[in-house]
Length: 139
Figure 1: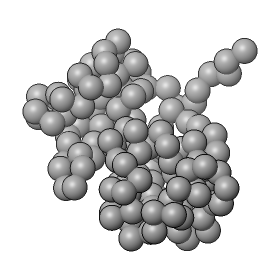
Figure 2 (figure 1 turned 90 degrees about the vertical axis):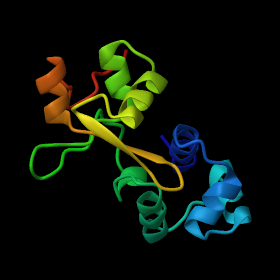
Figure 3 (figure 1 turned 120 degrees about the vertical axis):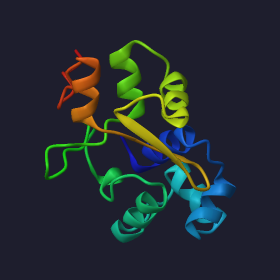
Figure 4 (figure 1 turned 30 degrees about the vertical axis):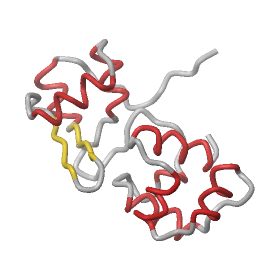
């Protein structure tokens, strides 16, 4: 997936407009428009900065599609969309449960926007659902 595509998906998940993204990152609206159209791509440092401001891994825009990002201690932040898919529920259902604090395996924090963390280890402990570390080839 290209930088532009990943940025569009992330903005959709965080319910961010180009204007909100500009305010949050300090990057001009015209630059953001060019990033989203694929006309230009930011430097590696700027990609890291955007990722940090949006609450995702610094290498989010430079990594391949994986089910999750492994941290040094073996625990990783399970993406909301994958948790929802594994549970057979909607993404919004999972997000609302995290916001309401009803799931013991994750939490939500509201700053300008909601940010979510789902512990891969706790998710498996409480739900009994194993989390895949790699996506299977489709095709």
